[in-house]
Image (cartoon, rainbow, N blue to C red):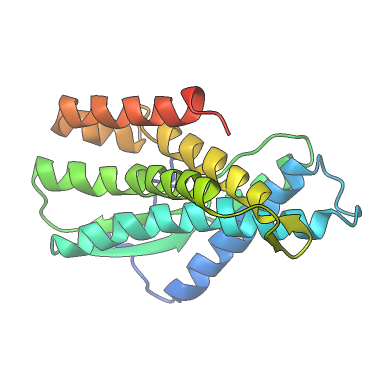
Length: 210
């Protein structure tokens, strides 16, 4: 999803920016905000650090994968595409997480170039599809991985459950068919693709419980 709060000029790119650093800021800031949200602001609790690791492996990876998917498809169609982090909203998301509110506006992929409605729709679809794909992978892993395996401080099963839930939600949320959300461009391109994607998102978010 494009950042709806501070749209840049049309010629924005990596001028004076380091894209890997921009992605690192988005990943770390989003992971920190999500961990604070999950812990109810209790950052001094020893359990915070394992939760932060889980947040980085699930929510943080989910948002980075979402933006990289947009960028990859845009470049595949010959457009110039770069990710730019939104520093103010990363800080705001960290601050409001202490209030048990999770806002994720880590930045956006901005692209230039002539695109057909189909290409624009596929670029938009790539982000939510990557999150729904990660949710499905987490679900399959939950079925296949034997119990007892752990990452530092947390059972792997807990991490996979978090990964499933947050990525299903991110995928569905970004399919809102209005404003700057990915769903608006997907719907403008093909209502059938939009309907199938939303149906999958609803199934993963509200029907299949883990």
